[in-house]
Length: 94
Image 1 (cartoon, rainbow, N blue to C red):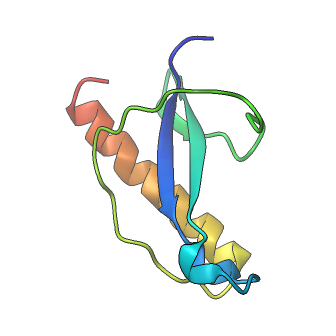
Image 2 (image 1 turned 90 degrees about the vertical axis):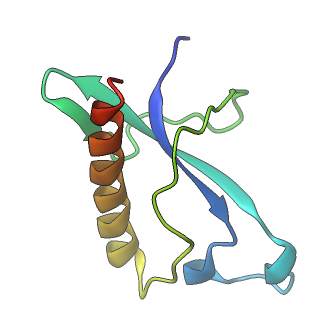
């Protein structure tokens, strides 16, 4: 239902290795970002799109895959990535 602004992760989730087949286990995660009067704001998981079909258009690259020491550190970095993405999108006029 319309375009959404998001950040995308494609990788192996090195912070949460829990499978024997880790090297071949690549996931695609889309973290939605909503546009409001203040620019962009991280939605913090309020909307779920699990099981939905969507098309994703990549407009840039933020950073390579990183390993984090826990969920709090990961969430903090995702928020940083959203901020970096916000700045890039605003520069692009999006």
